[in-house]
Length: 377
View (tube, rainbow, N blue to C red):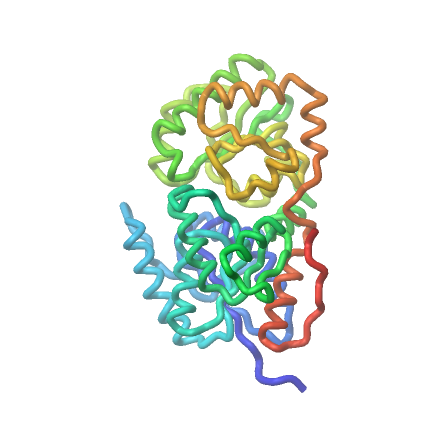
């Protein structure tokens, strides 16, 4: 007979949070001796609900803190107040969140204020400067000082944590839960797209540091690719932020070979990635998911906290310069041998068992029986 039932508070805020936390939440809920309470901060309300629906997950608490024109300070303070109250009422044994969003930063801070242990999924990602990506790099660095458990997706991420002084017994290499999610999602779906007979380039661009002129450069690069390769079409799901949408519609909305679409449900987006010939993105999650599907990635950022894909040959860092984007894409669209070499590179981000490894270590920390999953290599 074991002791009293343990309770875990799983906190999510954005669409990427939901994708990467869904496998962990499902694994937690499969534990007969754990109670799992899911909290949605509302940071990406509609897009988050799409993902929850796809994975069969529901939020037990949903904060309604968003407002038009909100600042980061308002968002941080509002989520912190609501989450502090939730922790006080639920009295969990552990709080868990993933990544580098404002919601995750606040979850770690709220747990710290209440002296609750915090588990960080996708821990240890770092860039060279605290201002890029903004504000995510600061968020994850602060959370790295708070967490009782660090679930690093790769050995490189684990090494970052150890260099910063994290206790070695608290750091676990698990692989990334995004791979758990994408492998589950691409088990179905027919891969149909608005352009079913041409080579598809899937583009996602939304990061705050790319707003304005950098995104215009990206769009100019896309136009040059379309001019040079008549068999290529572009599909671009538009982020809901009006700053991003208005610029994309202004630059690309009149081009018949560009499909500017609403953010698809996760299963649909996974199907788009599976169908795509090439992916251009400034998203961290897509950098991880695409190699699992054998898709070369051009990273529309000047630096990335995910160097493993660059080192493995799955991805190329091209930034937002029009000429660099055009040159890199042209090479992959013209050189079949190079394309195949990149597409067949080993995926460095996971094997689909990250959630099992994470939950095993949460159980260990909570002094529950656990199966010691081998770390991801």
